[in-house]
Each structure stands twice: as structure tokens, then as C-alpha cells.
Image (cartoon, rainbow, N blue to C red):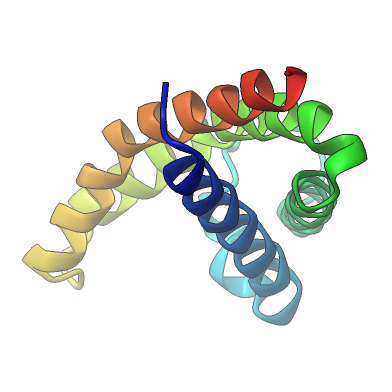
Length: 130
């Protein structure tokens, strides 16, 4: 069980991560459009904007004590839901001769980092239940 200080730091970090990423989805959607998996129906831009809205909504739910438990669950689901886009990005980067070794390495390292994000979101959900 994390200490109160560590739990608070985790909550702030995940809330900030989601709020920042959600904002960037709207400010620079062209950054995310190429990594929307082809298997999804419709336009990539629609999925980019929907995922940005989901991130902002989840950040708001985490920020408010009354909705924090639901926000933790939503965050866990969201981190799982965006995993295919991260896989798509890693595959694209690895195939691209224009991407640096560093960019390729970062794209690959992001994949296992989804696990602590999901676990952190679930820890927030559990802590909010008390």
C-alpha cells in the first residue's frame, strides 16, 4: 500500500498526464492521426478527438474526490484502450528509415510502461474506495 504522499503524487501525475495528453490531442491532432489503428472504422481524426475528450474527461474525474473512484477505473480502461495505438506507433517507427534510434527506442519502451499506468490507475481507484 503506497503512503499518502506517494498516493497523492501518483494521483497528480496521472491527472496531469491525461490532461496534458488530452489537450495535445486537440491542439495538434495531426500528431495522433497516423497512429490510429486502421482496424477502427471511420476517420482517424474522429478517433483522435474522441480519445482526447476521453483523456480530458478522465483527468477531470480523477481530480474531483467525488468521482475519483470512477476516474481511476476509467483511466485503467483508457490506458488499455490506447495500447493498440502505441503498438501501431512502435511498428511505424521501427519501419521508418527517417526515425532516429532514440525515437524508435522510446516508442518501444512506451509499450511496457502501460502496465504501471494501468496499475497506478487501479491503485487510485482502490484508494478512493476507502
